[in-house]
Length: 319
Image 1: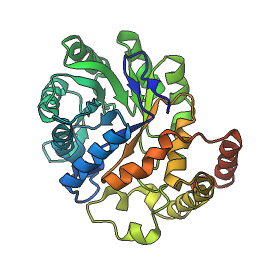
Image 2: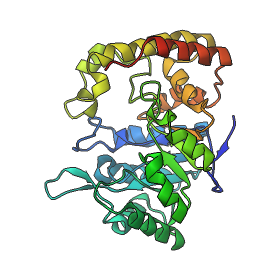
Image 3: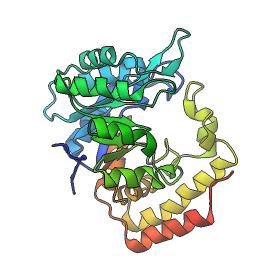
């Protein structure tokens, strides 16, 4: 298994990292329904024992609960992973999640407390905030780095145009974009920009929130909990759903050659992009952690990559 340097940092990452969006649970707009905290901790421990050496979380996941679970899981555990978290999504006066970078310093203090650490290995701005000065926000992030509260700083969901002026002020260690066979928007400008500027890429949702695992069905989608955001997500609705489940069905054939699932193939496909450092994979149970781990070692052949490209070209996204 290869490990890759994250940008120009001193952190070398395993191909897969532990994603903790879902395990936050909670009653907020992008929740995944009820979660079992003990199962979540078991999933983290299993993933670390398998070999994953980094965890990605965010203050907004479960409105702080995900960070608390991560802090509990790693405290005193025999393997110490790199801890990444994010700021910039906060509750407004209406109790709704909104993008704002006005409270980064306070958010950082709260994340340090919940994670039970003195420094965050990688601190990231979760989303650009419209109407706010991102340069000022980035300077605050740089100050936190200088003070030792964040070892490295990065961004999530920023475009190449949004990154360029910030990178000139303080090096961007990494970017976290969505990237999967269903969402390839990063390929045009974002991934080439990161590669040319030595910015690490840790892509999220390589299985597109479960759609490419090979175990998702229309019946499962219909039965998702009311507070699971996927019930209303575009790609879980028709006419997109049929196309997306078709991709997963196609990937099962490739996976069968290697003795792995469609989801493992989907993750390995993102890792085949030379701009990608590592992929974030959400796990909610030890079984899920074991199921995705083969993606860390699977190398798709040139012919298989072409086969996938030909299928995706022949089955374009619905308008």
